Length: 218
Image 1: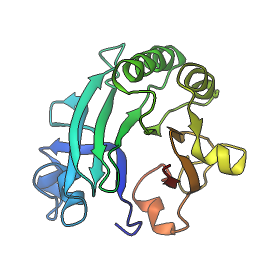
Image 2: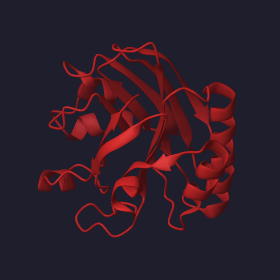
Image 3: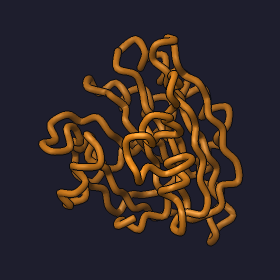
Image 4: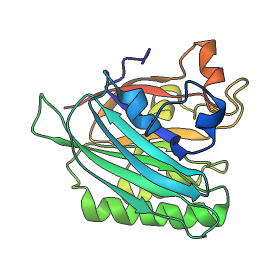
């Protein structure tokens, strides 16, 4: 909420957990995405990634602008590693353009990610017009830098932090960022800002440091 962001893309958001409420008195009822969105982001979507005995978690999109449609696409090549792409379409109030948003959390192994990059590219080529503004953001788990090659070659996407700083952002672990795990890819717009927020309190919220970006749309 401190960021006052128009759109938030979140990974590993708790959808349900039957045991946490028994331990923590202030544990909210319902989806955590709805709890976070209250009074700030009136439009939100949640897509399950992992389902287990006591609950589930996944990706979420929170938006101040109308989220006119969304779909959660399973990209899990293995039953033990549940992953999905949450694809939302946002109506921008100052434009007739539809902004396409994809919230992503890719697998830990190279085999998983290669298949997931292919499924992501197929999804975009089939459902996102070439002229539409597009943002793909989240935890890519991409230690070897394969995302840039695949997304640039097939989709003509650029990464926001790299565009502005000539390198990827170090985001993991949040208390001493060393690995370049999280990215914000885009096309059909230009980044004016991209960076990690300076607040030390973020370290208590996640093991990943968040990235914040701003864009100009033509």
